[in-house]
Length: 74
Image (cartoon, rainbow, N blue to C red):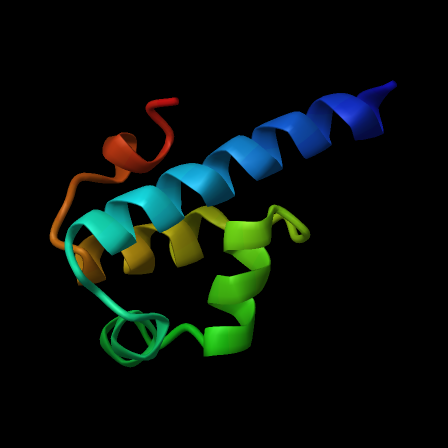
């Protein structure tokens, strides 16, 4: 049961990150460059297929010039 619950949150987080990124007109390439997070990791996060660290989320939010809490406001 935990796995299903976790998948729900991981998918919601990924969807939220992708939504903000696309609204800001930021490509995965640019986000990767600015955050020092690999494009493959960003793609996996956006798909909800990996459980990333808080430090990675902070790097992504900084690169998109938003507060970290905006990423998890879903």
